[in-house]
Image (cartoon, rainbow, N blue to C red; front, side, top):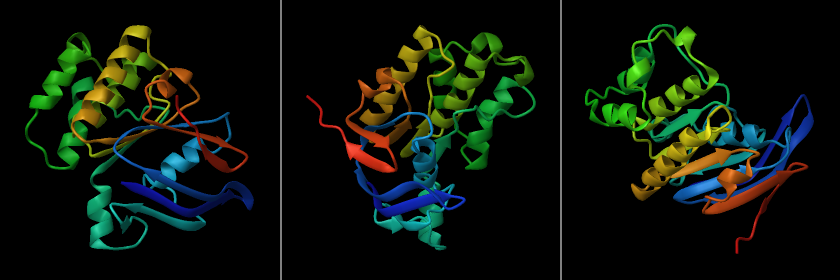
Length: 213
């Protein structure tokens, strides 16, 4: 479980998020709101990338912004995928195995399954600077999926994808949930909101839980 406790954040003294309290359980939680509402900011704070001005982020009751061994271990269970795909120089394959090497995983079975599932066999040896925006998006997502994260934070994961790839990504996110993953998605898209177990709407620095039918 992720808990956001009394969270506030400001850029250059301009309030972005004010006194936010949330509980995020396993499943898909979607953060929606207009551009500039603070979706990405909140996602980065939850991911341990952007310290809050006030408040705490607890993952399994561990404050991830405390300088402790437990906090570092908990952050190793979390993967964040930026809205602009982060791609390394070199081949697609080099990009895909990077995440596994960082955390010391030598079993590439899941990665091979993901390459087949997302039909990347034909571009696996292509140089990353030759990729389209959609291909870069899929590479960054597969790199995250391949480490089988317990906590996965995504910022606009579908924005460059065609309909077929969008469906595959959504279906795979549901598979991850079936394995017990907690997924948080910051997006403006209604499509992802339809698949959310929990939906929050962010506006004017406040976060409102949206009641579902």
